[in-house]
Length: 438
Ligand SMILES: *Cc1c(COP(=O)(O)O)cnc(C)c1O
Image 1: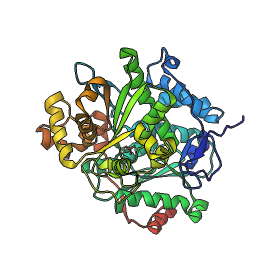
Image 2 (image 1 turned 90 degrees about the vertical axis):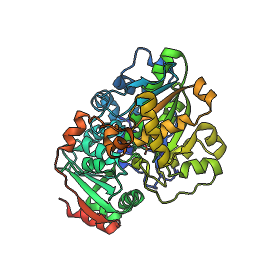
Image 3 (image 1 turned 135 degrees about the vertical axis):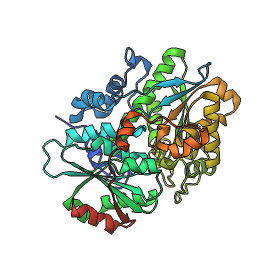
């Protein structure tokens, strides 16, 4: 079977590859990120009669896998990975504001969609492989849990999850350290950016590469990014079918993987209007759109900790999609939300709508509240609710004055014993850990 090369590095210095190869590599060899060479076009009529996530995935993702051996596995992969709902819940009677609940998966965050699809891809790609594969993932909160859950107990795969010590919520930490078996939890004395740097360094480490087959499961991996388009497609199609209007999305953003999936879905032709990036106090992207100068900086810790990113790696993909600052400004807008505004918005959301929002979702709600009134009236806004509030109950409960019910899946994880190792934010420490095996 011929394998068609459909993806190129955002830096243009690496051979083009097909989907399966891009998934195995994670990062392109020139340090860039894989982006589609060309865009398929799919409009609402192409999805007639299709509304479930796996079926939408079948149509939406097939063009990206064309000619790749994984294409044959797309239907079962999608059915297995996307087996929980992403309900679109209207908040206002006029239907101008809805919440897209992305937190009904095993670890109660949107990252379950991508992580589970990616794990399925690796399962297919690695069948019959001799050396075990090590998945390295840096997490500022939810990635690690979702990836660990998706890969836990899969044969032939080891997982190392790096998280910044003391900078994730206690509830998140439990979820990062409750695995054992083929999953190692690594508490790094540093920030999320340090964790991400360690992962990037490990990939460039030629000596390590000869001993260990490394891959990534961060949002830089196409196997996570592409399936995230599916829920935006589903929500925008549902809105289109009901109202013949486009859905505009507000996406809580850190590394920009979730937002990029939305923008890619729009590029392909799904009925998506505006896209607003809601950032916390890490304002690298809002500042860039305002000033035109790209100035990555160290991350600062906020209540919406899964978005504490000062140098979002998917920015390379965003700039590959919209070259030039003017084009980018026309394509997206971005806001920065302070911790005080997050707190106030959690309180307001509970009072106004009876909604309990996690701090990340609250940034999107705050971005909506800041829109000009006519924009709120004229468009159909969808807030991406990226995590279940029970994951951040230390923050949420005192604000709304009640306990947050814990979903059954999370309760099961919390009951498991914690285990993790601690290292300095130093490439040698990570290498030693990876080489020592288990
Ligand atoms: C990861 C995460 C985000 C940020 O998503 P990106 O794809 O990194 O922009 C937002 N909210 C929650 C709950 C997350 O876990």
